[in-house]
Image (cartoon, rainbow over all chains, first blue to last red):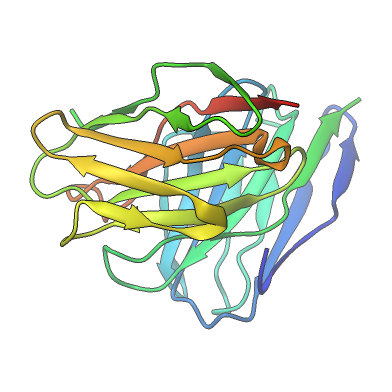
Length: 113
Length: 114
């Protein structure tokens, strides 16, 4: 898990609530990513950011929002518009350059009650 | 379209036997290929990557992978499996046409039986 922290580890949300997942890194990596993982499935990209104050939608951005005000931080908000948010959320970082591997945080498991 | 396939949902191996987890890819240009491992309720851990050079790549925990350009494959291997190798394994390829995002395989569950 290295220098990437995600909090909280477990999160419970009532329907209609917005919740924010935290991702912080001390690796001085440029790019940061949010993935969603559902049981028995691979990773799906929600949002990514390659530089401060800039971010792009991934494959499943609807119902999610992000910000990148600092290099170290890339919080993800799961809004009430996300109809099926129960999943395992993973944050990752990487150095610039196509050959660099991604480093992952420990994940946050979100459950809608 | 760029894609990665892991044809086996699950692989069962006896402890001490060699193991192989298969991965094939389809990508334009030169592929950058990666293997990751995930233990239950944990983040992914990087195992190894192929960028260029020697087709046999050695990584963490005794794992290695062989890049085969003609078969567009990048199979993960280990000569002697351990029970502790039991986990979920993901193959990924860099998409050169989408800001170098990773395209992920669906994952293969590896079960090592004592």
